[in-house]
Length: 195
Image (cartoon, rainbow, N blue to C red; front, top):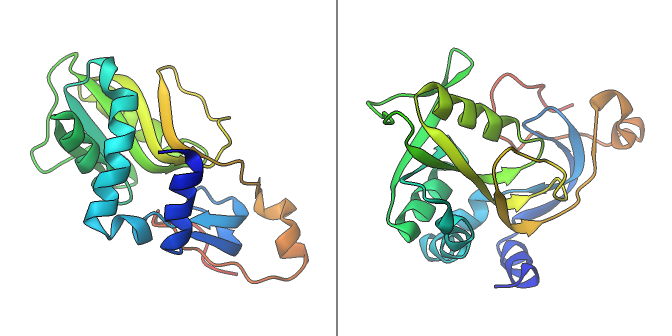
């Protein structure tokens, strides 16, 4: 699939939103990617993740780990496409952790996958969690890299769709200065509420 075809899918399911948004990172933006609107359709989720999986498949991973909540379906479907097992991290006392009896062997090669990369914070937290648990991150994947490819990692990264979406610090947000109300559609707790 081409990026245009993937973008068409996101538009078809109203998953590319325009307005004034407070992202999970705390930054503001005029566009928001709501992957959940696409991923709620299992066949579409499978189709996208079958496209993403091979971009990471040659890295020798044995396990896929994704951050909850947004990455869980992506992690599961990428793991299924590659014939690997799927784990997820979740926040406990503000820290990403592997819970529910999940474990990694020492040096186990792992792919970390996400729905959307903006600043890379959740991805890095998940990668750090993997490393702390003994695993070795060999690659990073996402359905959408909304940093325009600017967020870099120490391992190979792949995304189905790369968008250069502007973000602003809340103190320098032109949409705030215009008085446009902001909404927070993300899932990370502890961030500012809508203005």
